[in-house]
Length: 277
Image 1 (cartoon, rainbow, N blue to C red):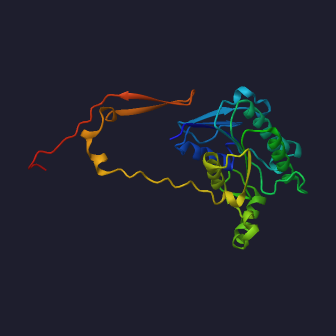
Image 2: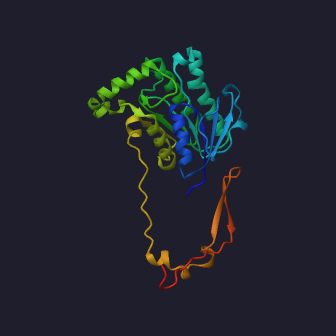
Image 3: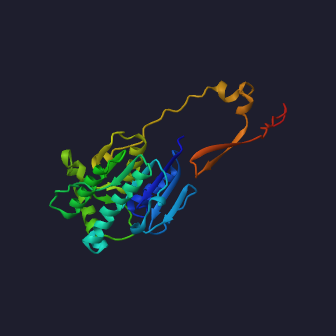
């Protein structure tokens, strides 16, 4: 088991909330910190919540972690203006990535969009493309760009346009084959799962772009189970004395270290006397 720490930005959205839950349930992680503008509903012993105003976020707000997951995103309709939209989808992620670089965080994972291109005729894709370009120029140690198609899942809010698009893509799903396969709608929970898989097992190169069709197929690698022999399992006399004690594992969140407290407890077995049931 690893002892990883993760930071999640945009943890209260559709993908971000699923990502936080999956990180907390993953044995590789001992610490998950979210930086958000409002408190999430989800709670967990591994989880630490920092309520911050993204306009005033500072380097000290971002502690060291192995990965920083950025799931920030909104719509122009919800933002109310292009200016606010660009602040959430471009300025905040770029500023946070810069702080992550200063703090020595080795891996930055960010959700953009399928079709992200700074030269796109579509404003939304242009903003996402500009973000990707500037993140690459920032020279992060490792950058993973996540490009999902239409995200589906249970949202806290109702978005008419996305619901209509979801129904249309669901109807057209069997027809989207070959190069059109990347346009298929994708579950937000699968995107979150794919991001963790990329963090743990993905390509180690400086910049990697993951299209939606690849995200949809990512699964955890199968780990073969150890074949414990009956002799190892049942011959207690052959085990060393130190292997018989019970161990309580304590997680030191501040240092991300694993410490063990050995509790001397004798293990007693009750044997039935012969002839008694």
